[in-house]
Structures are given as structure tokens and as C-alpha cells.
Image (cartoon, rainbow, N blue to C red; front, side, top):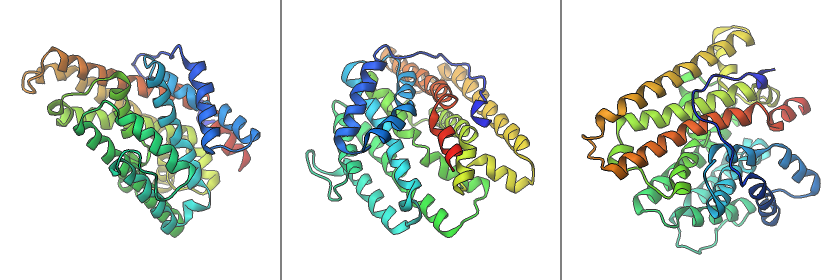
Length: 323
């Protein structure tokens, strides 16, 4: 079964010591906001082990910082489930929800969402806490990343409703937004109370590293979730696209996607090793070098965390069995 496949990711792995406390608090939060309703649904949500992903991805976050990243990362899954239902084939309604979610960071603090749903209330709460203490530049970047993430759902909804056949280049461009790693990677800085100096963050090298890490996450997800997407008739999976485009069997498509993962990991390692030569050009002081190193370490931890979670979660196995 593809969910059992794992890949060598040469990055540290850890688990947050507050994981149990954060899990119980998060379950209370989703129930209180109405994101998950009913004891049975809450049990399924718990069994998906979403909070484990966060405990692996942010092993050093503590207290309210861990609570924030737990809510923010896990919230993407109720959103995903919303679009897996009827909304996922209704582009007009999807656009309304996406526009409302994307507008949240640009509203006055304390403003209630115009489209009042559990999801919009939850994202309003998450944004308020995420923005606290961060610079205007970080908030602008994070808001733009959220907007691109939400807009990707509209495109995916259009693709499903119209039966669009995706080529690989179009799929990868869309998936890089839809996977939602950009907002999660922004939270590396927020949870650690630091910011990568803009001159370094916006460089070609750091942008390539961020893209590599996001690619590893979505490629691993595509391997682990291929049976789920196939059962749902969802075209958004690179394994399925390779099978169709090349006329190959599942095993060959999986081998090819695994090779893509290894290629991205090698690129990440080589780019990271070359970065110190650019520190002087970016005029990084000791603090700037430390903050950049913390961000890159966070990307590595995120890749490892996602795989650890992906091979164990009931989310993918349950969907493929029940379809």
C-alpha cells in the first residue's frame, strides 16, 4: 500500500514534549467552534493524528505558540474536507468562501467575518494570533501566502466540476499553492519569534529552498494519498497523472515520483551547503545568520514531520477503505 512507503530524508526528527496537552486543547477548540460536530466525527478527527504532525513539525514551540501552530496547521484539514464534499464541485460557492477567507488578514482587527461560518471564525482567530508581534513585512507576506492558498481551492473546484485533465506542469504549479505549506512555513518564524532578514528570504536561493521543501511535502502526500484521490475521482495527484500520461502501471509511477522526492532532497542539501558564501552579500549579521539557519532547520524538520505523520495517519487509509 502506498501509505506504507517512506523515503530517506536526512533531516532531524523530534516530538514536542507538550504534544498531549496541545492535542486535548485543540480538540476542545475545534468542538467549541463547530469545526467538528458530534462524538463520532470528533473521534475520527482525533484518529487522524493531525496534532502529531504539528508536534513533529514544531518540536520546540511552547505554550501559546504551540497552541497557535496546532490550530493553524490542523485547520487546513477541515477546510480540505469542506472542499472534498459538494462545495468541491461548485466553483461559484467555492469562490465566495475563498474570497472571504483571503480577506481576513486585510480587515480591521476585531472585525467579524462577513460570511459567518465555523471556518471563517476559526481563521479569523488564527490570523489574529499569528500576526501578533510580527512585522508589517511578515504580515504582508503571510497574508499573500494565505490568499494564494485559498485561491487554489477555487481552481481545484473548477477542475473537478469541468472534468479538466491536468498536465504535469499545470498540476505542479497548482499543487505548490494548494498543499498549504507556505502558511505553515511562515509559522516557523512566528512560533520561534524571529524573522528571516528580507534580503535573504527573498533571495533566489532561499526561495528555491522553500519551494524544494514544499515539493517534498506534496510529493510525499501524493504517494501516501493516491488511493484516496483515485477512489474519489480526484485528478489532483502526481502519481495518477504520471500513470495516465505515460501509460505505465502504479508501481512505475510510484518509482518515478520517489525519484522526484530524492532529487528535491539532494537539491535542498546542496543549496543549503552553499548558502554561507552569500551571507556577506546579504549583509547578514550574527542574528541574521542565526535566524536564517533556524528557518532552514525548520524546513528540514517539516519535511521529516510530514512523512512521519503521512505513513501513520488514519486519514488516508480510512478514505481509501471507505470509498
